[in-house]
Length: 230
Image (cartoon, rainbow, N blue to C red):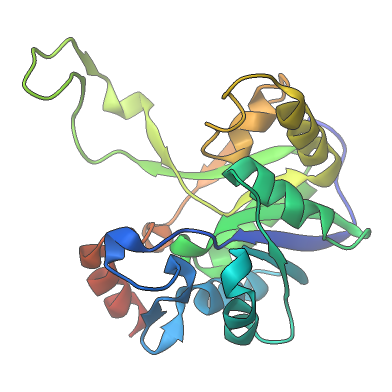
């Protein structure tokens, strides 16, 4: 673990999901919950957790709509062809003084301010990469559909990963530079930023997550989100 991290706190919000599984005609980040777009809920809670600067990464053809949703307090930039490229674009747009960087999915828009603050505190304490995690509720098996079960997993040793994930900025920049340089589809297949940092050989630190940081993907999730909003 490195020394304590100082400097301001910034966040990159990934808001490029299509929303097709929600049956929406707009990107997922613009789908309203309780009359407010998901991305606006996400930015509001990041600020409640101590984030000072926010960059939202959005589809090129919806930049103005996302800007209107988040208001003048956040920058909005165009994303890339992959999640990794989109986060890298947001990272490049952050102010120079930001030394603690969170990466957050707009689809986890109800991650509470207390969770955000917990991640920030862990990075400030010297952990270069921090993820919030939660227990696995279901039994897990290694299997294909309509096929024999090959193995059972011990769910007590497993956790689900949430966002926001927190990083020392220099470490995150190194991870993205390395991912961009890698050949093949490895970087394109990365589903989160902590895995890119782990690929450098860095330790990823886990802190308690929160049920409210659920990812909104299906119409059922939207119904749950409406309840959270109320």
